[in-house]
Image (cartoon, rainbow, N blue to C red; front, side, top):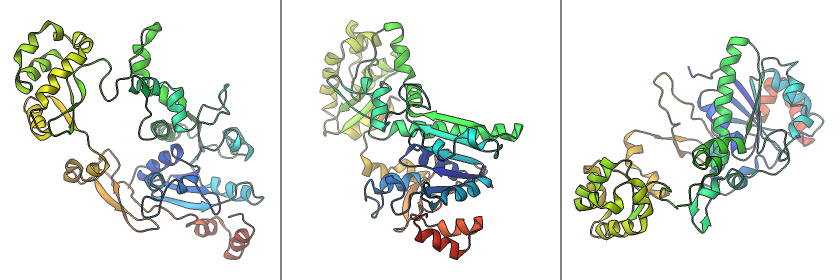
Length: 392
């Protein structure tokens, strides 16, 4: 038995934030019915063709779901949506601002007929305020939240290499829905959950916000290095490969000088006698460190760092992550089916010994339309008429 067995989620979703939220609910056993546009579906299906002709974002965020095609603006759509919601525990949507309300899917419109229903709205900026109607793509939220101001090089801001604003909103949506289900178990009533990408990302920005508290200087952009701790970040070994390392305290600095650099005298050098002094003298100290590192291969350097118990990591590319020995040793890869055949998939983070996460197929567009409509009471002739009319 999985934690969300018996829970039905209806979702009008696209892109990443809502699909990532609902995929995680499916991992926990929920039945997720994904409502998609006829013919085109979730536009994330067309982002690329990198996974055997399927889109990389889509296969990541949509496994274990059922795909129902439905033109929500068609005259027949309201009846179908109403039938779906009779059996639903959760409604999730990240449509354009105001679109759900125009479809009669706002929480206030549904709570009277469906008092146990949990409605989760995911948006860029929230349901009110001056930014409500602004378009909110991931990069734009990274910018508005201040993330770009502290990420990149001093003269060149850089966005994160994955959709962190979408991911953060999807994570908060999932955790709030789980909390709402727990609350409903006590009160018997559903509720309204609202998650904005901006608020999710600003929560993640709390360290640099507090660092810049009351007008203080914000953390500078420092590339892959740490803005306020040194040595911490990327260093080049003698074979040209990059090794990441991080020192957290003065004891580690002394060990690093003695065992890794084999320069115990540097630990007593007044220029480097505290983290703040090392940060101020980072260019001079970097030169000294990389002169020593140039004499070692990356493997030799990592061996020294490990022996000294100094935190370190390889800077892996995507191909190396696919082959990561730790993920393989812990059996973290499995397979899921797709319309183009099986593909590898990472098991959901967090191992629970009481259940196995659901890892079912990525659906083809409209794959479950007939079955779902039949379950809701439409016979095949009526389904065929809906299809001919372009409703599904």
